Each structure stands twice: as structure tokens, then as C-alpha cells.
Image (cartoon, rainbow, N blue to C red; front, top):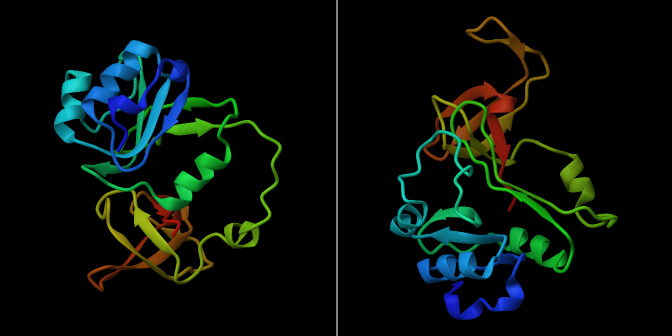
Length: 194
């Protein structure tokens, strides 16, 4: 948990990467000191509302003038950050970075960004990442009517398929956690790295 006692004046202009949660005290102290960004797994819903001064909706967020960018990688409550995310961010400790906390969860999904210019070459896992989606890949659907559903890729038809909008796109069959198989455009899913 990233608490206020862990934040020091040396953290001014830094991007702090925590673990499972950030406290309200840590948010306030970060603004006082001039921390640039906090990246953690979770946050209490009430703390987020209190900190921002408003309920966060489905429109674009991250444009609020709070003096601090907050990126939550997992969700509300105490939620341990994905180990692969934490390890990746830790591997770039000390590097210059830029952040954009803008988020939108409706049409035109926007995700927060952490941009780290570097010249490192990824050796491990590059073949796995290059393969993209294959049967058995875990995915999350990011558009209605199955928004938020998690499942596993069952089949990736090669042919383009026509949608209700009459456009032709590549699709995939996803077996949802409840066993139902749905067909959705490939652009409407994101890979869940494990």
C-alpha cells in the first residue's frame, strides 16, 4: 500500500509506482510535494471521489486539474498490481517518462499511457507477443453488448464478415466464462496478458 509516510520531498516531479493501493493521505501529500504521477493497482472509490471532487463517469476522465496524475491499473479497492506490469515499470526505474491519465470506457476506448523512451531490446517473450491472438488467448471485450466480459479465443475466421453497419471486418469467436460462445470484431477485444 502506498501511504503518505512513504512519500518524501525527493519524490518531487517523480512517477511513483506502488503496489495494491494508494491512500488518501498519500494523494494529498503527493500534491503538496509535487509528485507528477502515482501508478498503483487500486484505490478506494470514496477516496477517488473525495480527491477529484466529483463522481467519475464513463466520459473522458483524466483532464481534471488536480496537480497529480493517478493511474489505477486494476480497479477499486485493494487490488495487487499485475506482476508483469509492476516488473515492466520497475525495469525502467530512473528513466525519463511521460504520462497521460486520460481514460474513456465507452466508444473510442482510451487507456492511460506511460511513455518511456528507451533503446532496450526485448529478448524474452518477443515471439509470444508477435503471435498476437491465437486460440486459447485470454481476452476482454471492450465494446457493447458484451462490454467487460472475459473469455478465451476459440476461433479466428480468416474471411471478413459483414456487421449490422454493413462494413466488413475480421472477427473472432470468444468463449465467455459462462460457456457461451460469441462472435465479435477483433478490434473489440484486448488481450489479457497473464
